[in-house]
Length: 210
Image (cartoon, rainbow, N blue to C red; front, side, top):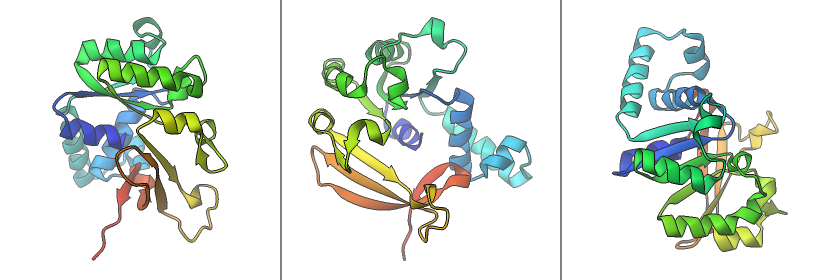
């Protein structure tokens, strides 16, 4: 979600965020929490103070001012309105919104074939259609023993892995931190970046030093 927001602010064209699991209203609410810095539970419960509510309004206006569009597999109109293939869907969305960037959360839920089988065709389609595709996929489908599978390294331009120690160990001394691993970058070096995980705001943030 944060990638889609940043891209929508920086790009002149439209950006489409597509979710395989979460409803559009949940996606939007999570984005507003991060932009407005309001606790997600408070927004959901409707227990915001005047100041927090004003930040929510400003964040909503900021979000609506971008050319960011949302679709979800769980939306009522999904079955009748959209192609089941990711290229077919993206072409349809591109025509509707003049979009050239598609951010897909849980892309494996939208594919009728395994992601490793589809990757080469997705890359060919992106080149032919001049579309940029950013997608999340479960780690176990594209990695083995901590390394990207060969077909993934061959087909993707950039591969990132996001991990949190406290996701599985609540007593971890690194609670509230996350590691962003740059596993593959066709035009640059690999690296590891430490981020702050602000789960109550539904976002990750860079640490500020000094």
